[in-house]
Image (cartoon, rainbow, N blue to C red; front, side):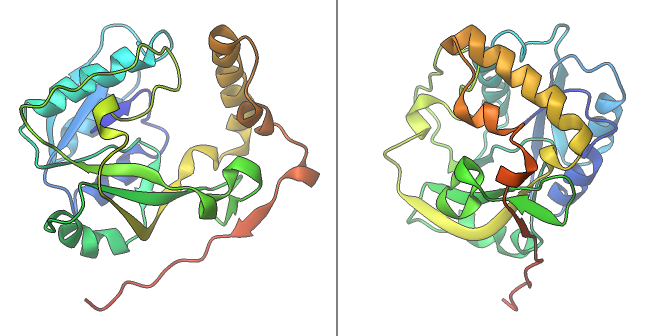
Length: 234
């Protein structure tokens, strides 16, 4: 499941081309894009459900947007759900190992390390809360039909999952890495910083430490080189 907004000139086509190789279905909620995002989505053979909002919801209430996407996903009767953004892409290993992750009976959720590529695709950021080695993101969850699923009433930072899927599940921590391409273009940093700063102030009364770290001086930004992993001969 994926929310998109004006992604035509960014990474959407690349992300969908990769997903086509290892997912069964893709459900997309277009949050009122004004570019060619819809054309890219409709051209993807795995996109089975696409809907475009008339007005942008993300800027006013993210949880309602995520809940709308969730209800769309439920209509296609999934077994497992992958929550992915239009600027996130798994390393190639996922194409070969995804099936084994969803055909087991031990775990109901799979978490992955997210690497924020910074300023280029050659380096990822690793200082403070950006450190990918100390955190996992829940991106893949087994769906249980017939259960009630609820969302927090949060206009920002609401998370990818209903409350019932955020804790209490048996979890597998995968070593397959995810590239987050959203910070690759240095020219986007200021715009993204101002966007999240305004939303933080509106919700919390002040910008979060993580938001402020976006514009940290270069001397405080720690980078490590991204190294491609090998596909295991499974």
